[in-house]
Length: 396
Ligand SMILES: NC(=O)c1ccc[n+]([C@@H]2O[C@H](COP(=O)([O-])OP(=O)(O)OC[C@H]3O[C@@H](n4cnc5c(N)ncnc54)[C@H](OP(=O)(O)O)[C@@H]3O)[C@@H](O)[C@H]2O)c1
Image 1 (spheres, rainbow, N blue to C red):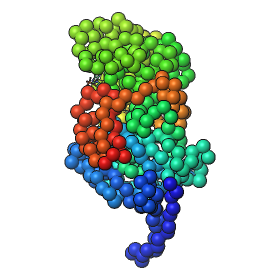
Image 2 (image 1 turned 30 degrees about the vertical axis):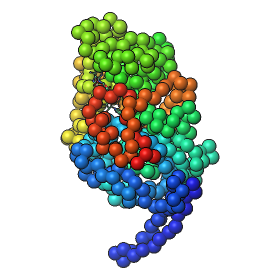
Image 3 (image 1 turned 30 degrees about the horizontal axis):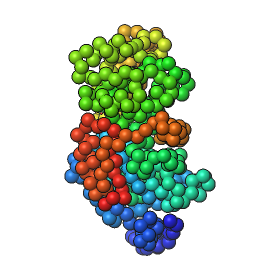
Image 4 (image 1 turned 180 degrees about the vertical axis):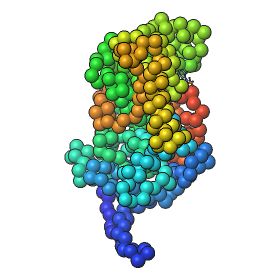
């Protein structure tokens, strides 16, 4: 499992370029390699833009605090499917350009995939001794980086920890992107890091998806009272997650039931639906919050460009805050906030503890082999998820 590297010097346009040609030993024991299998896109579009290659370059550890991971499994998130269609490209490319500095920003080929389990095969000199080459880890990669639907991926050490031993590779790969998003939406955006969640009444809209199922379990572990909504067929599954009240949104009395179970300190929209809904069920005083993981932030920049898009974002945030309740936010009424995936190391540590103590359990809906990745994307595209869709990189 030891990585080696050699330097090649070749001539190009009268310039001598120094190129690191890297040879990574993989777990197959078939010697060293500098090429890998990966699913990539070369333009934005539908499922037909997904291409599998055997000759993608194994990414290089360029920063002292990065690790190179041989991926065992990775999940498919709605974000992957959206990014395949170009969602967020303008904002993501803007940040990538800033990161690239004087170098050219490379948009394509683009590898998707945000969370993984795997083995460290190489590490930068700034990576602490607690993470060694050969360790089994789990982690996330931000949308500003190449993803992990590939045999190898680079991740910053702040987004990687040892895999909890009670989880299989598939289970570990299924949970971090949504769990980190739920954690940052509730703890940071929802301020549950400064106010105790104990006794708070929280409505999770969409308890049956990846995000909602994590949010319910975390909120229960933190001592909150949890009411959630889901489709009729998902009720038995969502009940197993520990919510105090599960409401079938097809029930003709659903709105009445949601109102009766209020008023809420927090409503977390984890269903990917437009906002805000049920705003009048929030407490009118005491800094109640409507948090949505479906903000228009990236979409506005995609549509209107950076400057106009950001202006539209400010407008959208203010107008949704003014319309959420009859008590305006500047008089202590509820606020509307946008929750995001923020790959905070504290989040991953706390999620590792919750999973180790079986307070947060991954739910796998379906596992696909690496070569079946387009079918896995189709499954996520079709919606109605009941847990996570995972790619087993070790099966062909
Ligand atoms: N901002 C960020 O950084 C970030 C990060 C992660 C996710 N997200 C977004 O958050 C949303 C959820 O993500 P996810 O990974 O959990 O997606 P998911 O796994 O597809 O789950 C969505 C769930 O919501 C349910 N649902 C749909 N409409 C509903 C409604 N009206 N009421 C209650 N439940 C409803 C769906 O089942 P049924 O259709 O059968 O009801 C499904 O189970 C997506 O839009 C995603 O893009 C944002």
